[in-house]
Length: 531
Image (cartoon, rainbow, N blue to C red; front, top):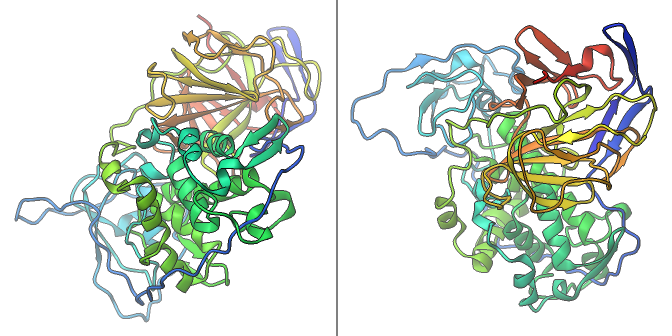
């Protein structure tokens, strides 16, 4: 993740001038720097059995239609503001096509549907009232004009719960499973800045850092390089098992991290409605089937980086596809999905949260919604910088404080994860990530905290940074929650709105508006109300 921010400004507290540090803050968090790489060979993925895609794809309803035989009454969907225009244009000379009947699915919002179908809000007819920004109930019938040409299949290949690190894998013993496998991964060791890590430890680390399902990571690794049950057959596969051949991405950690970046772009871009097109390895562009779920969009996006359309179709929909392999390795993932879905219920609300510093203090909002982890991922994080008279990564006596009651379930490399439902399981319910926490005086693993309890000091720890700050983000059932999305990141009454670009945006509390600013200007100052 790359973060640009600053904590420079001058403000007045009554008649007292308080100096804020004057350098622009910049941090890059998400990858551990390797010391050395202990590596060997890799395997060419055989071309799977190919299925020729059809020229057009008919949308299959994603939820059962109403059981009543009477026709629903359709109403216009109210127009919404601050939503990007559809990416495709309509040919006025084209022959009119019948409208698409689409049943909404878990996680759908009006902006996401507009982006995926290439329509405006007033073109959609609905059997129920549709909230302009919130989550839509699953199973609502929408009648949508068909402005689409040829698209990828809308046939789903992967549930959402099998892409994010959800409750479906909360009891999966990654290291125990890999220890029982006969492949290259079992004995793999890689040198990292924190010491040597086994292949199993790396898979676990990447899964946890990115909140990506380890079932999927292992299935993709096996499909691309046979590391789980076999041996790589050439040098490229041993050093670049995800097939992304760049020297700076050599080794399992960086290869898996790159693959997860692509999954995140697909998953969260689909959630937000900002992704509607694939660009295949050979440069061919294709509109994505709008009936997909986020998990399928994620896998489609990743596999487009590797294959041309024909190979891609076989790799995802053929008899020897990656999903077929994953089911052989870990069982029926669609059945598993039924035990945990919906991950993202329509009535989801955020618990009460406070700003992550002590009451009465004034910090600066130096980063609006931006990736929680790794470049291109979910715009789920916000950055706050404390007051300081020194620039750069100066030690701070200020405290990052608990935003709500919970239990600390993970502590590593400047990251603290607080589980808010108190069950001690990170993959279930709400979690808060506090990043860039200093090495000294931070809360211990397993500690139960209350609101305002001290988490640790803000710092540059846990990734490259040029200024002291903390980076906070939310997860629900393993899914990063978009900070400016349908359930806005709200703290101490300040609700977050996304900007037109990552790191931009604002937080609003009544008439108070705080504008994110990388140079920590006075407009970025945010005050936590006192007791």
